[in-house]
Structure formats: C-alpha cells, structure tokens
Image (cartoon, rainbow, N blue to C red):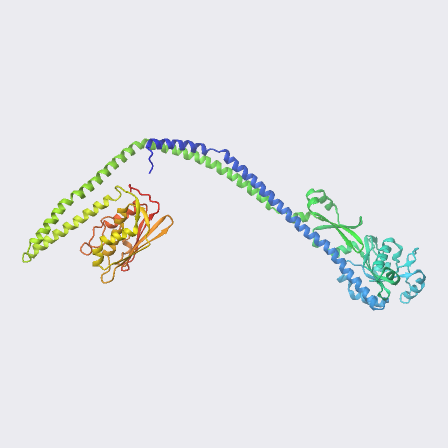
Length: 609
C-alpha cells in the first residue's frame, strides 16, 4: 500500500503531468528514429540493387561462358569429322578416288549434322615434278579439271575434291599454296600432325566475300608421322573443310536463341562482328560496359581468337527487376507513415493531457469530499469490528450460564419425570451449545489478521498438532491421515494451524458412513507458490455448490444431519487470501473432495483484505 498523503500524491501527479507534456511533443529522438529508418531503407535498397546486379552479372557470366564453350565444342565436332575422313583415307591405302569420296561425303549429311560447314574436301600434296601425272589422274573422271592459280612455290596443294560440288565449284582445283594464310596453316598441319585452321581469308566460293577460314587435318603415306622428318617426307595431303564465319556462328549460336552480341577477332582482324549501332550505344553506357561485357582468348588449332560478348538492350530489359525500387518506395512509405504516426501520437497525447487536466481539476474539487467519506467509512468499519468483538465476547457469559443451568436441570430431572419436560431441557442445552460454538467461531474469524507475526512454520508439525487436537474424532471415525513431504513455509503459525484444522475436521465430518475414511495432505512447488491439497473420500460436493461453500454462515446440510457453524471454510478462505494465495475445490457428489490452496513462498500478508 502507498504511504503517500493526498497532498504528496497530488504533487507527484503534477510532476508526472509536466513530464508527459514534455514527452508528448515531437522529440529529437523521434526525428532520429525517422532519420535512421530512412538510412536503413536506403541501405536495404542499395543492398538489394547490388544483389540484383550481382545476380545479373552471374547470369551473364554463365551465358557468355556457354557461348565460348559452344564455339570450342563446335570446332571440336568439325575436327572429329575431319579425322574420321583421314581415317577413311588411311583405310583406303593412303588415297581415295572422287567417286568414293563423294559417296562418303554424302553419307555424312553435312547440311543436317554439321551446320555452318560449307563442305568437306580433299587436298593432295603434289611435288612440282609430279604435276602432269596428278592432272592426268584427275582428268580421267573430270576432263576439265585444272590447277589454279599459278605460283612460285615448289609444293602444290590443289583441292582435288570438295562436296557438295555445286556450291563449291569455284574451289575445285584451287591450289591453297598460292596464298600465305592457306599455305602457312597447311604446312603447320603437315609439320605438327595436328588439325590447324588458317588465318582470316575470303573463300572463293563465297559470293558475299565475308571472312572465312579453312580447317585442315593432315594424312601421311603409310601413316608414318613419328618425327618431323617423317611427316614431311610422307606427307600426302589434307582433309579440309571451308567455313564462312557468319554461317558457322549462325549454326553454332543461333541469334534467335540469345540476347547477347558476339564479335571474334583473329589476332586483331575481325572475322565476325555483330556490333551494330545498338551495341555501340550499349557500350557507351558505363553500367553496361563495366558489368555486361566479357572477353575471352581462345586458342583454336594454331590461332588465337579474341571473343567479345556484350549484352543487348533487350537483355537489360529482361534481366531488370523492379524489386529494389519497390523496396525503396515501400521503405519511404513506411518512414512517412512512421513520421505521421509520431505526429498523431503527439497530437493524441496533447488531447489526452488536456482531458487529464480537466479530470484532475474535477478530482481536486471532489477529493475533499472523498477524503471525508473515506474517514467516515474507516470509523464505521472500526465501530463494526469493535461491536462484533464485544458482542461475541459478551455473549459468551450468558451462554455459559445458560449451558450450565440447562445441564444442571437435565441432571436433576429423573427419568420418571415428564418426558416432554426432559426433551425441552435437552433442546435448550443443545441450542445453547450451538450458540456458544457459533460465537467462538465468529470470534476466531474476526481475530484472523489482527496481529500477524510471520514466522517459519513446519507444516508437518502443524499436521501432527492437528492430529493430536482431533485425536478423539480420528479414533471414533477410524480415519487415516496421510501427509507427505510437507515444506516449511513463512506464515502466521496460528492461522495456518486453523486452516489445516478446519479442512481436516470437515473431511472427518463429511465422511461416507460404512466406508473407511482416508485423508491425504500433499504439497508441490509451483514457481513462486506452494500448492497444497487436502483430499478425502467423503460424500463430495456438487459442482453448482462450489461458490457457496466459502461464504460465511452458508451451510449445505441441516444442523440435525451434520453439525457445524458455516464459518470454517470462510475462515480458511480468509487465511489463504490474507497470505496472498487462492483456495478452490474440486469434487463430485459421492466421490470425495480435494481442497486446493496456494501460499506464496515470499509472503505478502495483507491486513486490510
């Protein structure tokens, strides 16, 4: 309970009111919260934007890696076709005629299986002294066959066959030794025994005159190619495939399946370039130039290709995500609502304080009247308590006199006297005894909480004392009482003794006739409370009567059936409540009752309940 006087309490109210008025205004802390919330929004937006850019960059990296790998894989596929053709030539004894080559090439289905390739052909290595013999052999099946153009190199490398013939007729008889890029790659293939491609050239059969290259795979007489000298001595020709680069890239990558642009340079010279005005515009944008452009250097069969890959504007549009902007807009909206909330709270607080001031003024006007009313009620309460004590105390003397004389009268009345007179005297004596017990119980009820002296109470010893006090009732009713693991608590010893005595006495009183009476007292620790249970196997209580049994003077049975004052359980409730606990019952008729009550481990005794 507070010890503040009304004047002191009013002073504290004024101080608290001034503090609330100050706190109700928009404080610098509110602006700080809004500022840091806005900073957090910007940080999350920036983080989300970086995450999105990183995701786009990773996706772009995967797709560009795939393009570079596709170029390598496609060239490896063509290389496999060339080496298969070399194997055929070797299997035919180191050479093959036009008819067999044509049948073989048609069986490859070049147009279907090798997109981007212009054809597949055979080049014979013809020393200068064997030119006429070579021409005579070729003209047996193709009378108009000739070697062209003329050059000064001693080694002739004419294209003997190229399938399909119609698309590549201009290449038939072309001596690849006439031009440096073609010749250099052919000699590298001869000397290394590996597949080689030429530098950038324009194919004679390409009407568009776009960059292309030749792909060579050498074959040797008797397959002798262990050393450089053996390779040069036994070199008999090349299987080759001509490529127009833009057709190769179309077959390899397919523009309709990607949103990336590619350019390829062979040692500085563009052999393929998709850079359009659109791409050039993309390259002017720093974000695209810095994040969405990759460059690869590919070592391909004796050449070094520089492959550059850019994202197109459509790639940017498709990869773009509105999530960062949504986060930014949502965060700013939340910050705005937070600021609005602070303003509304400040306004509401001012209205509340104004209302509180009006209430305070009204309270001050009525406080004196309320104080007078409280003083009158306290005086009246003290008078009632004094009256109850005096009445219950002073009633004992006439009741004692009445009891003594009614007992004397019963002793003097002989059995042969009027039976009706004896019964009247007996009723007087019983009524006086009941009245005396009622007065004693009422006096005991009023004394609960008068002068509480908290002490350590051994509940097991309390139960032992109750056994001794109720020993005659326990023996007469053959009652068994079981008490297990009862704690030592801090409480008012006399009141705890009264609590247990009333509960055990009731359990004995309301037993079932003809059945052995058993009472158990147990306790368990539950957090900050002790939870006690006093259970019996008596007549039980109907659920609708639970609220009634703890009311003073409230009885469920007639006096003639079971004696009692109707104060015992009310006293139990008063003891438990003053100790800060709760009491309740669980029962059903004919199945016994369990009275539960809790007592706090740290007592908070209240004398004013």
